[in-house]
Image (cartoon, rainbow, N blue to C red; front, side, top):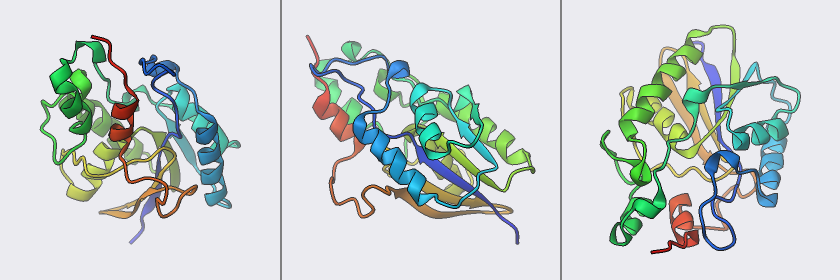
Length: 220
C-alpha cells in the first residue's frame, strides 16, 4: 500500500490581546519572539525532509511560520483554510464568556455551535473539507506541509479519524505543533500535537483557549 505524508502544523505563537487584555485584529497578528523560536525548532525537527508543496491559509501568522520552517519552498495561500472566525467578544454577555472560551473546543461539537459568537462549526467544515479534497485529488505530491490553525487542524484530524464530517474538539493544538498524517486508501494518524520546542509538554497543562480566556480583559 502506498500512502502520502501530510505534515499538518499550527502556526507558531502570536498575541491576540494587547498588554491591557484588549483584542487585536487576528488577521494582523505576527509571531512573538517565542513563536519564532517555536518555528525554528520545528524547522530543525524537519531537517532533511523535502516538501513537495507548502500550503498556508494566507493569513500572516501562517505565512511567517512557513517561511521559517520551509524557507526554500514556494508558499501557497488557500483562504478556505483560514481559521474559524470569532464574533465580537464585546457582544458576548459577561455570564457567557467563560463557557464561550472554555467550551469552544470541548467534546464532539454540533455544527450549529458558534465559535466565540462568530462562525459556526458547520460553516468551517463547509469550506475546509472541500479544500482538503482538492489537495488530495492532486496526485503530484508525496510530502506536503500545511501550516494552518487550531480549529482547521481539528476539522482535518476529525475527518481523518472518523471518515465523516465531524468536529472533535479534544485535540489540543499548541502553537507551532506538528501533526503527522498518512493518507492513501485509508487515513493513518501517526502523531498529534508534537511540539519540538517542548516535546513532552512539560511547560503547561492549559489549553490554548484557557490561556486566551485568562488574557482577555473585557470592558462592560
